[in-house]
Image (cartoon, rainbow, N blue to C red):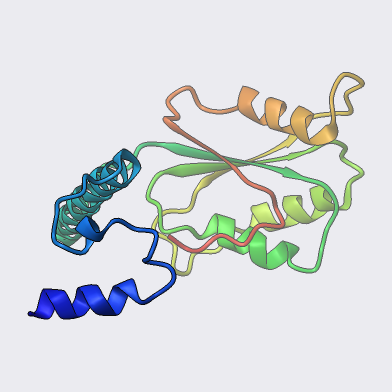
Length: 185
């Protein structure tokens, strides 16, 4: 009885008059292939999303476990090569930060292109008196004059000359600018 009611009701609509009466009688109509493909790919996407979520939680657990372990004591000899040119407002504070790192075994190489550079005189004065407060171990420091090059820029030339004077046992190279403000660790 309910089917007959629906059949009468929907047949009265202009849109459904063109459809065959078997559509409303409960006859199976096959699903078009684009709809099937959409549903299959949607289901695959849901499975992939769930798998990614599980993997994300596994990775988070791995990272938290690794961070809770004590830090090892491996500290290779490191060298910081710093090309310098001119003196800015933060020159002294940045210089102090480079010289007071909490790293046990490192050397700092300051490189200038010309001895008439204002940074050269400030570096000479400052390196003569290294700070002792809060330092694990005072770093070995070098002040190098690279000279002016016609083949490359001043910064690249300074970096290359800084590399030439490094200790051969250096395992970690760090390049920084004097206008950078590193954290103590």
